[in-house]
Amino acid sequence: MSGTKELSAPRPTVWSVINEPSEMAKLMPGVESFEIVDEKHWTAKVKVPLGLGGLKMTMNFEKLEEREPEFASMRAKGQGVGALMDMTTSFTLSEAGTGTSMAWEADVKIAGPVGAMGQRVLQPIVTQQVSQVLDALEKRVAAASTE
Picture 1 (cartoon, helix red, strand yellow):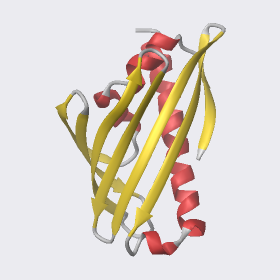
Picture 2 (spheres, helix red, strand yellow):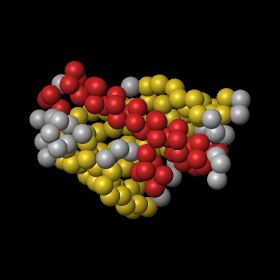
Picture 3 (cartoon, rainbow, N blue to C red):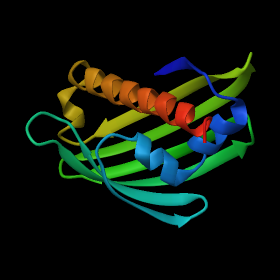
């Protein structure tokens, strides 16, 4: 998956939100707990909405690369009952007038019985989760730019 999101905040503000693990945890739907291990690693307990009750996963995040204030990438590995998830995401920020344009990419792989449900079933769920994160990001950077 990939896309572009226009944000009405300056690039340093957007960078400070998306590059801070505790800020990112606030943007992700279903986060039940969050712990920073060090500046490049953190973990989260997440409940992913998959039908009845959802799927509880332990997610381990790792920053792979960052070039402030324009590019960062990270990898997340998740494990839950019936599912293994491996996700790599990256974003590139560029100035767009008084705001910021964020080009993003996410490569999500799900294995195990949940992964066997197939892309047709999982794609709408992944798309919804990405949409929720981007909407939350837009609200958070708007709030941060007025702080």
